[in-house]
Image (cartoon, rainbow over all chains, first blue to last red; front, top):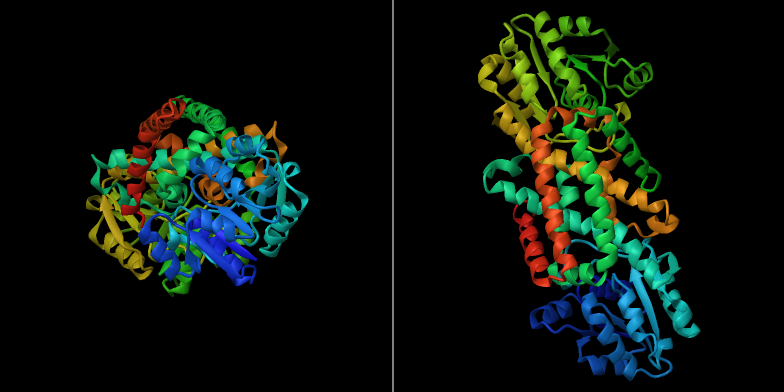
Length: 280
Length: 280
């Protein structure tokens, strides 16, 4: 199978490494507009050669769109405009609603499978690609009822070979859930980093005390704007919903601290502790 | 050196293991009011025997107070009431202002050294104690100018032997910094866990998508109420300051998302990215 990956960064690059390791791709063609990144991707073995978008789609059995989510709807349409009946196109984006809506009535809609592998780190670019990225992580397929059976079978076989449990859900359901368990974590990390950086202007020594807890809550604040601005805006209404609820929860705790309400804080923390049930 | 550790949980227990591993203690006496925890601490080798507070302080060259911060000021006074000129008392608490104020005029103030080892996890109790807890982590000593030189020398020697870089600062400075780089991370994690748990009541499948990012920002939400309610209330004004700023930062991002302000979000994220400078 020949694979074309548009975007050889964190996700596209890691997928290239995984496909190679499992012997799932004969040739990997890559698209990377930034010349430096393209050279680095070749050096790291993420692609055999760099091609144009049209060349890649034409030559590939499987096209993978792994670019920022704001570029996905148009790239998906352009790819579908060019594929034949035995070629398949997937994306790896973190939001699905707009993408699925844009391609809904495309004559070649059946050749597309909307995919979200649930893995990521705060790093970006070809050098962020990791061999051990996907195994054991869930992968979500959205609206598979609109995809051709053979395209879904190809994609499921591929992710099964990467040891990824497969979940199916609607695009809207996906976007809502992603807002709660991924997008909000990034918003809080960005805001937390800026909270502390703001204070650092007065208190130069503030980071001397930074320990493990701070590192883990603020880690995602290193994530790239080019990736995250489009995700937050494309998933706007879900992100705003969860953000409003989160600010409300913080205001409740703030009022309890103001009133020395030890019992209220205790109950709040005990409730939060039940997250152990989900993340043991 | 005989050591008495009041509170054989996460911090006291880990310190016991570290002292044993480096051969720094002849005998370790422990206090643990909860019988089950006491038995577990003995089984795990965190203490040679369980004693009363008075017995422990009397027998020990070094008394370590490793109990929740709301209990520390009175325990510190009681310990200082009982120590002689060659005995030393330290605490390991996460807030220092009230403690240092309460003992400020005690006749034996010089025998006390206020200590905060900058390490912790979301776990608690004797079984949470870890051998590798402290090496490489900072330890803060507060108001050492009020401690006797030999007591400070003993404590510095001990933490140097544990490979912990030593920082000195005032109690007020410590509490402000701890609010920014530790206490706020716990507040945001508790609030984030409750935000998502709240939504889960409508959407049972929400955690199927939880990936690495969510896990790391919500990890601290597993932390114990008995530890954290006192910390948040004893460091109330600093915690409220940082919480207000954090809510403000979240509201700024919320407004940018509402207005599709991609440029504002980009700048916000780029500013947050500069946290790399501090946490590479």
